[in-house]
Length: 315
Image: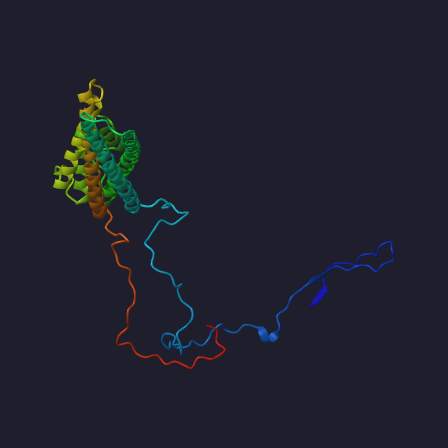
């Protein structure tokens, strides 16, 4: 209802002769039958969980299980080292297998060149055969060098992430800072002694040995270390031997190059074994190794009462 505000006088009319306006104030009143009671409602006793005549149509979305990942937009937007380790290891293994194939072909091409050099002592060689040999050696030597650089880079990346994952798993800090690891791997001469020690420290942390014990490398690490030193020595000897003059020196350089490529094959294979073993130790939950879960059958379950499905019901 509306009523005039108390104490307010009439307003005189305006110049146009219109009736004067009286200011009013709107007041809302509650109907009598809508007045609240004492506020008490009868409590319904608990009758158990809800029961349905047919299985309900609502529920969780029908999606497969996904492995836990980082949530976008949170402080953990960057994947944890164990999750990154599996991805980097997969890429590293792929590059290393490519290096194995290219280095094997390059070694075979060098051996073919050596055979042609031996045959050229007694007879002339076809220009097409010599050209094919030179093209094969040049192409696969260049490809092997480029892929070897990529393989070294991704292997060092995997090593840094693996050290971080091992330290997080053990709740400790890495045994040496990152800059010492990079210096020990990149400085020629020093990397012959430091590479095996760094890998032994990673293995020590990966197999959960106490931090106060001295790392004791396994046979796999020792084999990798020996292959690493042999490849470095053969590569250095080949580069120095190619600086010598004379036909015999050039022939010997071809043989040394073939042996260097073979040592690169062995080193890449040993690195594949190391990467796979340490990755499984640090990140054992791999989606390729775990079989997906699925429901095959349900036994001894009570039959639910079902009503006849209406023809007009939507699927």
